[in-house]
Length: 107
Image 1 (cartoon, helix red, strand yellow):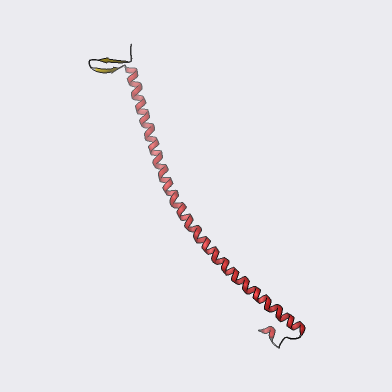
Image 2 (cartoon, helix red, strand yellow):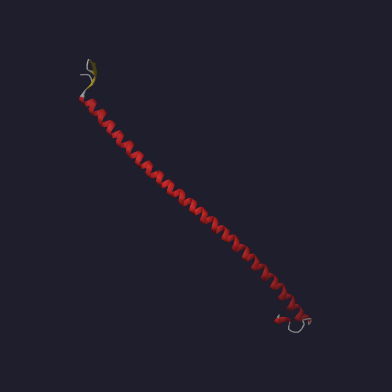
């Protein structure tokens, strides 16, 4: 018994071979369909994560700008403190040497 025959009616298949082909095609179709569905979900996830990454980058840039502003403010405060320390040291030295004018410490 041959599985495939050529006859006047066309190509005929034996039932076991026909069922094997049919089941294979259906199973293949289901597998391809599930892969396409999974791919669509992955694409949605990628799009959502891309938006989240863009949002996080914007937040990071804003935080970096704020940190830079804070650094400038702290530098200005440090410069002011250094200037005040210098003035206090001069006043203390003048007081020790007796050159301080009256009321110099109250200024």
